[in-house]
Length: 492
Image 1 (cartoon, rainbow, N blue to C red):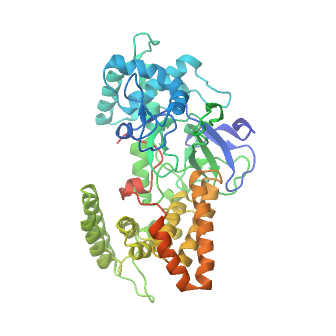
Image 2 (image 1 turned 120 degrees about the vertical axis):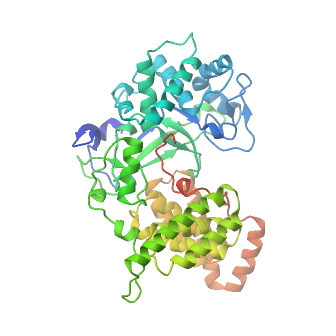
């Protein structure tokens, strides 16, 4: 079934154009999938990520002509040539590499010049019809914007079709508020930005009925004929009735409604009027004090602990940037010791502290500690997030792995099963990360059976297995902002 038959464009009250379902959907259904019109690797990762399949590889081969593009091998280079051909000679002529925004706009324009404004019969909108919000930009944003356009005009080859500044500005504006973050093949790291026209039509809701996931498909076959395109999938999070508007979340729900509204206004130029923002749903939980046997801390105590926690979070960022993980642990411990007795287990600053500490301790291989804080984090998330939220699934996966590493097999297996159930909805059975989880689930299930039969044998076998090959989730701790990834790419 094509995307055309499952969705329709309509006027969404107060939101402009939107998409609605033309049939009923259930949790985990793919409503439509869409390849990117164009995509580029982030400036900071151009030498570490394949420019064709967006995989992270240890050793990449670079394009012999421009010395800029990097690929896994000849297969990927051939697959990416159509997109790179004009860019290759443009970079050589320009003598340097322009930034990611300029590279993306150029790739979009070369494609549109070649194929016209509609590149497939699945495309529901042209770029001309998408909003650019240039009129809404702040002064400092406009300044940067004009610099990009100026540099683009220098970069754009004389022998390519020439366009007016208005046309060029419009496309820069479109990617500025509609660019979508492209992740690596495991879905664990944001590595680039792309434009997906149909996805641009899906409006925001803080408690959405859909989620977007990037599925790289098969890009590793030596015969490029068997390559499937890098594409996004719009997936239903629960039952969606015919005629219902399709929505995704542009910002993380773990922010307070006031903060979400501020982010949406500055990044996407609209005022959110969703139920959760209007009625401040769950804001009280996110800033709550801890209640024990009917006794609550005073408002003053909660405010004091909240402010202290916020200050300490800023300190953790500094320590993390300096790579001083032992200092980071010290700050987290100090903060948790002081605020845990006062703040509720759903308080978002305390949750961030637990998340940071569990990630750092896992990285430093203090698994017992990491497991305890990961469990607290997941229990808090479960009270706040939609039960099928991808961030909740990823957090449960991390907690499951950490418990497995700590030898806490029962809780570990339970967490991995929970993560698997969520990711089957948000990512689907063919996504690499779901496949990883399926393997982990089988592994922990087998170990749990062994554990129940004979604990001593289980622990001695586990020691041997750990020496041999631990489950790898050991990347360096990332900032909180990246940790719970805001999928919709924005220029900072």
